[in-house]
Image (cartoon, rainbow over all chains, first blue to last red; front, side):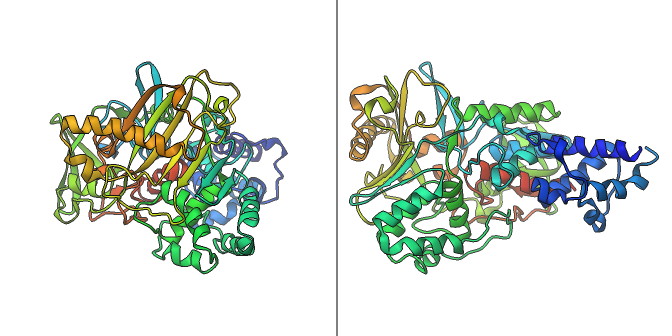
Length: 83
Length: 455
């Protein structure tokens, strides 16, 4: 997957998680926690959705990489490039 | 072999089931009754729909809110806000003989009522609210401090103290007179800060939404599937035996049946019997018009006829001194209703109802209904001439339809916040895990499923 495809995949997960949110205004480098008020349960869900949909395993020590859209895509690029 | 079998298709069991099915676990929910819902359920009687259980959904937050238990729950269950069709309350009241305090889904109203009625306590109340901090985090750790003692650090007036405790005990008090302070904070927030709401169609709308979601994700829901026992072998729950003789195997079991009820299914001798626990009677009156046509516009009235509020097993069929008067019509719905309804709930002694024979029981229901309505109309306009149908339920009714020992709707006095049991692969959720209200018990199922069943 390309960076923009990974971004779309994340957006799809976020829109399932928060169907009432307008994600078109999402800023790339502002923490998702601040923009959408996601909590730790929601971040765990993003990790589990990535596993469910793409079989991507994210170790717990890397969860901090999923802070903003930009950092998440950068983190996932090497893991998802061959998908 | 299932990954998880869930005992009970109430709010917490359904929520847990949705989480597990969403993440592709093989999950089956077993419900003894022919209707889902458990403690918060519904029925049809002489052509009308009735709800049982809580009068309202607490923890309301308006569309677009991202914080708080409701927003968190919607994300966990992948629901849109409008799918629950919640209409906020019109406004409620705590009515004691000398003072009435109105409250709504905006804490500012209660603050101003307290400032007007208890001027010396105005700042103390603000300090109390500030001291409660942020109990928003789902805390499975639990605590054991007395809410009465904590509140007494701020509020001096015993009348105001009892007026604040009255709605909270009535809407979630599993033990007499007092509760844990953490529990108090959660209830305070859910009722006074976030507030009350209800779908026009009642609790069935929420339950059907949850059951449909569960089934659409591949979950299996079996009605009329009562559990006879949990077969234990080598400190593990090995299988489930149904009342019809069927055996089912699962790697893990999640029970929403209640702590003691679950221990009884395991034949765990020490804890099979619930001691204590509180139960209620409820009288339901159907009116030929909406209550506001009779001059009653309050959503809920918590009443008490003396300055001290006594929340305990009354040792009688009904405690007529206090109660809750709910009008399910008095929420801000988009459309009016043809008829009205008044539900009156009061403390009752399970033992007293259990002692009656069949004829005495039927007579007692009629007598208590009349006495409860007479008690309630001291605090709301007299609606008796508008009544066109009635129904009544007792602690025995609750026990019969929910399987809860002693009809204890708020479960055992001692909560089990971590959801664990004496068996490695048996967990509990729901009322006895400790979160309260409809949103709270749904989150209980979510939290226990996330913590133990999605590994």
